[in-house]
Amino acid sequence: MIDQTVFNNKKAAYYTLGCKLNFAETSTIGKLLAEQGVRKVRPGEKADICVVNTCSVTELADKKCRQAIHRLVKQHPGAFVVVTGCYAQLKPGDVAKIKGVDVVLGAEQKGDLLQYLGDLHKHEEGEAFTTTTKDIRSFSPSCSRGDRTRFFLKVQDGCDYFCSYCTIPFARGRSRNGTIASMVKQAEEVAAGGGKEIVLTGVNIGDFGKSTGETFIDLIRALDEVEGIARYRISSIEPNLITDEAIDFVARSKRFAPHFHIPLQSGSDDVLKLMRRRYDTALFRHKIEKIKEIMPHAFIGVDVIVGTRGETDAYFEDARAFIESLDISQLHVFSYSERPGTQALKIDHVVDPKTKHARSQQLLDISDRKLHAFYEAHIGQKANVLFEQTRKGGMMHGFTENYIKVEIPYDHSLVNETRQVILEGWNEDKTALVVKIIE
Ligand code: SF4
Image 1 (cartoon, protein in one colour):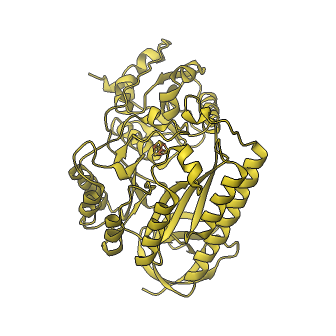
Image 2: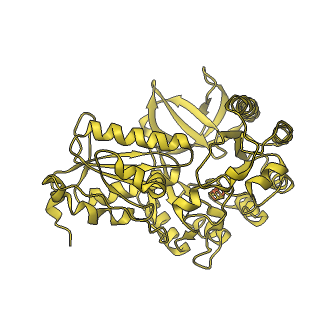
Image 3: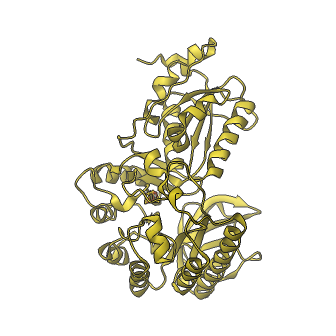
């Protein structure tokens, strides 16, 4: 039993690194603490509790986590510091050694946070303790309001794939999910609270249903029926798991946006084999062509990694040419980072940093061209925009269903509202399209 008085007048600071899933989970922790009366720290105030939700996708991510922890410990002297997330799960010993850290929680132990915080008084009395836990088998539901108008609904966690370069399955455990009924309930709660857009997140969301005997297509069919939600977006989904049936469904659904995010990782079949990915370039091309055939206006974002071990000049050239030939809208380019304990370390050919950088630049150039062409092709067309609350330089932003960023002078009455607009042309710095509202 927790002594509730330990939370009296307490303030918490939160810091999140990494993916949308982490942001969703930090938000759930924030809600949990808010229910106990712990409020979020205001700028300039000292926090009593610091929660750092970490990422471990690259070596750089690990470094940023350590820096963030040091920074928070310095900014909030004497605070009770809890570190959770993938880096905490993978390197609990390293995290525990950082001065000022009180508790290290495994990726799926965030729900136990209150139990640990129940010991806050011991901390205040100067007693030091660090707890490490490694249970990564359960599924903690989480749905959070993002900084913007959209909500992130975690539908799945963990991964069974073990790609040769990736540590996420070690950090997050095996694939698991909540039930369709529980997801629908959370979406209904979002709608009841006035939320309009939900992004489905997870580590490998196409694997949804493995632990409940359900399927991803049934999940999206059920969510599509929730009244009040204007839009859903499907975050990153593996190419071999986005079925043709699911693509057909999105095309005729009431609420799923024509917006896809599909990791390719390499456009060379040889490199895909080294990466132990579960598809080849022919399958990937088929998915892109299928989407574009029935939704020519669909936005397709694609993740790629450059400089993986084994990516020779010839393989990179294959990859570059393949990527160039795809009808996609944007690339998210990542530089390969060596991760201890991965199978990729057994591959001999190592790409030097200079070559990695040059390859990354080439792909970023392709991405810029493709994104520019995608926006350009929509100028003069009508679109539905959901406006967001951020205000910058007197302007507000929103996104069309197919993820084109638009800009308009700030008008508070438009926040979280959908309007039909005409996409008139580029803004000054060519980062968004300016629009005229027609309905
Ligand atoms: Fe990592 Fe591959 Fe699973 Fe993605 S699919 S989380 S890259 S192991």
